[in-house]
Length: 147
Image (cartoon, rainbow, N blue to C red):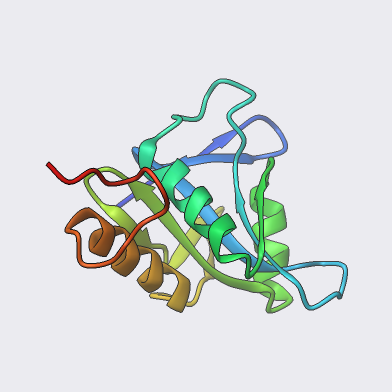
């Protein structure tokens, strides 16, 4: 069995969310540039929750400057292709209660898409977000206020 559901939209099977969490995919770029990108579905269609944890991950990623952060539609066939080509580095869900939760595989139409889990990026997000929340590490400007 599986502990979560990956929500798909439309005939093109656009990925929306995982369970009640936002979803992220960390990929090697398809253009062969050796660059990496963190992809999450955009808010523009109106079916994605604009969560605080989602935005925190986007903001942290951009502050690190180590890879591109992209809010765009991503389809299940694109994820399957990236996995088959060895470009799918990791995937995770993100939300208030879970913080970040790794995705190790996706079953679709009788076959599994295997995903390396728990990846270094997922671990880093969890560690940094919890560290900021508990005051163990300094977060971006304005994230924490001492009272």
